[in-house]
Length: 289
Image 1 (spheres, one colour):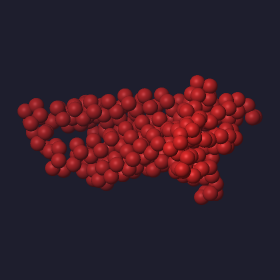
Image 2 (cartoon, helix red, strand yellow):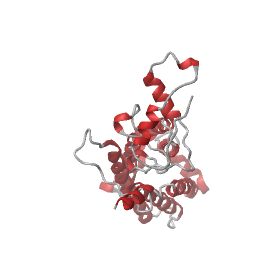
Image 3 (cartoon, helix red, strand yellow):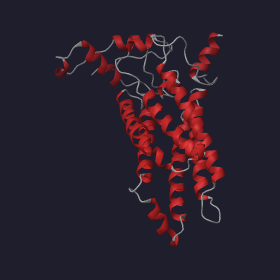
Image 4 (cartoon, rainbow, N blue to C red):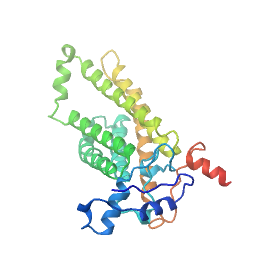
């Protein structure tokens, strides 16, 4: 299968027009398919020179680096990122409210269903679809967080993991072992999210702020579970702080999702995402000025 030639001297929509018009196939097995299928396959399996080519980042597509899906009117597969972002946002919102004890709710069981179905399964599927369209960052982030929510749901499923039984057995009746294990688990996700955050520093304010707030939330929640009082209870003040950043992350994820959904075909305005001045799009804007 031939690869489209990508010009590196200009960053505009004509790149994608040339990519779409220079598709073809050398495999005899695909000759029976129509042109639309060949165009879809060639465009999505095309390999781009990642050293000399870069595209402007966009908050709603989960592509802070080289990948860009192209103009909306020329896409033959939907952008799966907003779906994954919405699944992440809702589940994070529920967990943030629980950590902040909104309306006096402090038990995490209420978020199990959301973590399994929406934040878990749906987000995992959207990550797999990101892999299909060639977005490595989106596939890694969405699939990983989908797995995170599924793991959290399994842990807090009533009668499943038997948290109360584990708390009774830990340290001769002390819940310290369980809370330490949960803190270590969250600390691992803090490290992973920090790595993802590093890949957003040349993107947009919304996109970078989303991963920064998620990272801070993981760190505070991990500390809250590991720094307990004399009764071996988690530090509620730190957990509430973690819940606040979780809520912030939820709203930023919804913002990014809306930025990926709203376009000229369905909205009267485009959602701002504010490109960093050192990002490719920011540099391009300064050159035009």
